[in-house]
Length: 317
Image 1: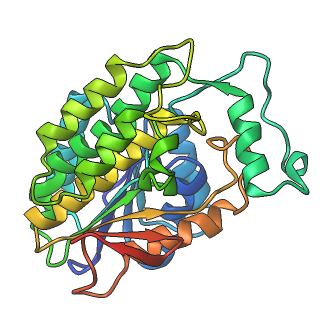
Image 2 (image 1 turned 45 degrees about the horizontal axis):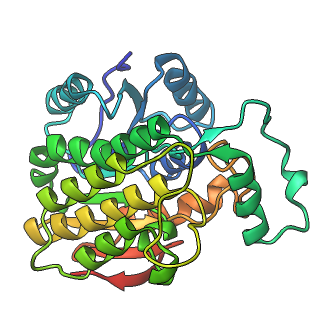
């Protein structure tokens, strides 16, 4: 499962990419390996992860190994940390890419070909996705557990290895949805409170974030969208938005706590993958470029910042 030992220079950078068997994650693995980085490709499903590694090796990228990881399983995370410690003794780059949409696809919906979306603008594509999925409490819970807590728990477990690097990097794949820039009167109350907390960096704590996420899930009703603090309704994908907002907040706190690391979050763009049901505007290769750019920033680069498609948008710290 873990691949053969590869002879490498002690100066070779080592990267872990969660959710690396397809889509943006697979492209991030390919592009990092193409830049001379030793890559550990992570996936929940061992067969799919091994197949992804073989696909990359067929392209001539040999310094890639697979390790199984379920980001919501503490024992799986512990096994990963032990493997990395035994094999590499350090970690230079962590790309937290594994995610779920927080919605369920309607039972009769089949993912269409990309031609389905010809002529549609971004709003029409997102509306199509909204109309062909449903928000349920179970899907929302899974979304928060994977997108926020999975990112957090993997990061915390691998922090000692990252701190052993001369210039450790953490790249959290986020979303523009996580900025919660919709006018407050159109947001669920939990969004408004979360955004208020994000703006108060000196008082923001992980414990407070936990309470906000618990409140969101506790008030989630499968039969309707969350109540807003004014008129209007949400634009859908509420669990995904809240979880990614929490990822952005966690990125900000982690950067302040560990100034020796480069910790940033990045919106890769609206990408055509299974995740977006092929409705995205960018290819996985295009989406991965911004993620890889952050992972390979020069020493002493920005930290605690939000990037979109490789460009700095907001400096949190």
